Length: 276
Image (cartoon, rainbow, N blue to C red; front, side):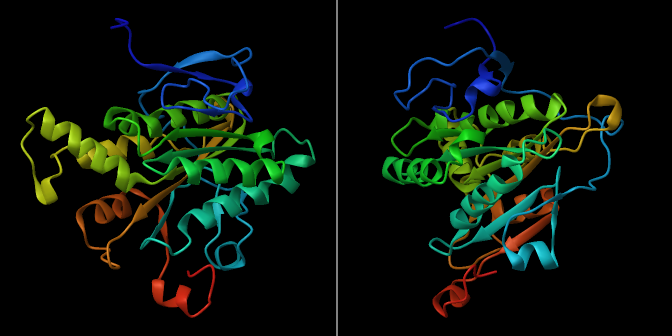
């Protein structure tokens, strides 16, 4: 026991690093540079501290940017069955920021945080390789709670990543956070709750599983000019079972987010990719 509330390192020193859910580096590049520590659980900004979303966040996907553009400070859900290219859309979005970020304009640069929850270690390693080969790791942070990590770490990882993204939001910069995926976080939370003997509800999830995701996604916001005009854009990912969008977790997250990018297996198999 540390006797303190969970906090994680945050700051520019995190860029280009791979850390676990507690912010401990797992990429073998040594200790983190100068950083501050931020609480993992903080309240989302209030209405007065916010501003309406007005700056675009280019994903690099024509289907999204031309028809349903995403703004900086928005929450857009990526939902679909397994193997429909959900992670690919998220990774493309990170890679697409390279051109904008290379201009060196601080007010346009978009820092990226990628949170991998319950994924295979090989998948995370592959992802790190893709980002480093494209020189996209320079403006990205990876938070990994893999399938072999205990449930509490998988539950905590999205909040840790969010705290790291909030550093940029609160200092007048722009950040993008990807939660891949929140279905696995909900499963880890269900496992913890059942072990703690909390009464199960629909699909054996605990009653506060809605609050689990709402308090996380409400932290993505566009700040007002008085509070620095920074933003945090969220792209949560949800995996459906056989296209069932009306299951418990998908309906919850759909109601919390501002819009959805829905992927269909049928389109994917017909060769239409991204299968939006």
